[in-house]
Amino acid sequence: MRGLFLAFGTVMLAGGAVGAGDIAAGRRFYEAAEFDKAAAQFQLVCRRDANPDACYWTGLSYERLGDTKIPFGCSTSRKAQEYFAKAAALRPERTEYRDALFDFLLDYADCSRSGIRQAAQMLAATPESDPDYPRMRDRLQEAARWNQSLESRLSNFFLLVPRVAYITAAWPAAAFGSPSRRCSDCRNPALAEAGGRASAGTQTGER
Image 1 (cartoon, rainbow, N blue to C red):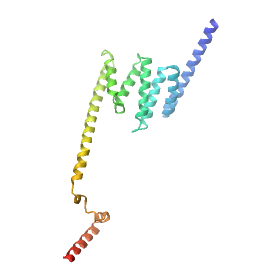
Image 2: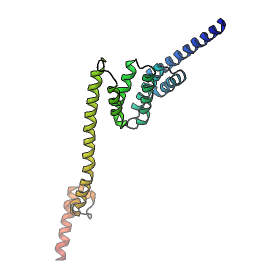
Image 3: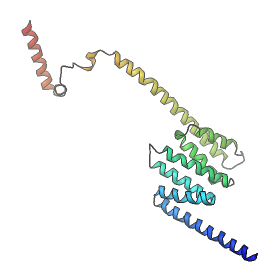
Image 4: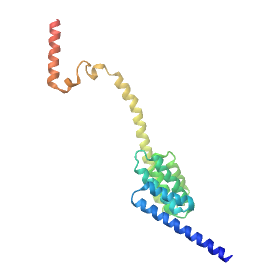
């Protein structure tokens, strides 16, 4: 029986060593800005060992990878939320995991309609006695104001587009210049003047 326990302990230690080695490899990829390889490496350990540190670094790697794909990185960045949430769920007492998820929801609110709402739910679940509560509250308020301002600007823009189209359609054709004049003449004042004199001469002859 003692031999069985020793064998089991050896396997556990070996597994821990392998996990640590995988995390170290992932850190090297991350520091070399090879975020896709880092994400794959950390993700392996997160899924295999339910290692909260590996899940956290998976989130960081996907976050940075998404940043390199702007303005098309939202689908990649959203994967970061999943792994920050896993890390926070595995070790809820680790405030750095919670803060990473909270800040991600606010920093990437433009990638998710529910980001600010989810961050508000996290703040509501945080005791006001938490040392980080004031920072979280201020960040949420700032993000909410910015998001509201952005939505207002976008709304005004989309209202302006049909108005511009209507006004443009109502303009007389003369406002866009005579179609009989060549653009090369419009750009060259001498040719435009000569064309004007020729046109005037033709009209005089016709009279």
